[in-house]
Length: 297
Image (cartoon, rainbow, N blue to C red):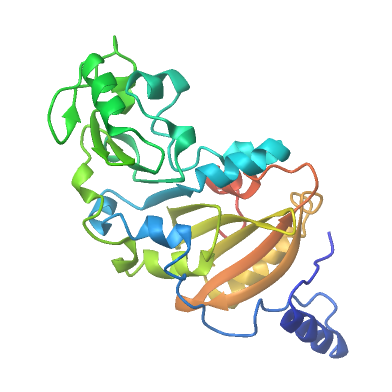
């Protein structure tokens, strides 16, 4: 689909480009060459600041979701529900959560880092530490500050969660090789590779940061005027921004989204803002990234 523009600065940039005869030019988001770091008060920034970069030792994979807000949006538009569990996928089914007293849907937000046995999930808000301790103990977990249990196929919840650490209204869940002490022991913004991707994504309802051949990529999802938009952050500067925008206008994506704008921000990251077509899931870009079908990634 033809690219559209929303920001005033972008409209002016588009007008200038058109005057020069370039009808396909895509304007920058705000006319700047660098992106400010996410404001400390954004929920995404709060989540990132609670996880130590030590959690990235086995590779970078970060997932974040504003659970409460996504569920609220999903009540009116079910397209949001496909990303409502982003950040707390360590618990594969509802019965696993109830078996250890965890309430994933009650969380304000969730963030998880890494995958497999080193994965750590932090669910913030809506948790009852006493209920978790009682249920986990009944399920065979033992310990004081951290409740642990070896993986046991006869006890399905242990195949995903071998460590549980209640923290007042929050809870930390970990695989067998994880360190639940990674929570509240540093900030992911301290990682020089993660920080610019997070800054590029900005204020989002859900996000994923992952490794690709050219470096880290970021996908964020946000709501704008009741529409679903995705923010795509790719290494490679202006060339990557142009290539991604062209690919999104191509046959695979043209009927599924509109390119709103592109920019080049901190650390030469390409930032592409797209709006999902009516009926397209909020998970569209995250799924494309997970399947390594994202242009430029």
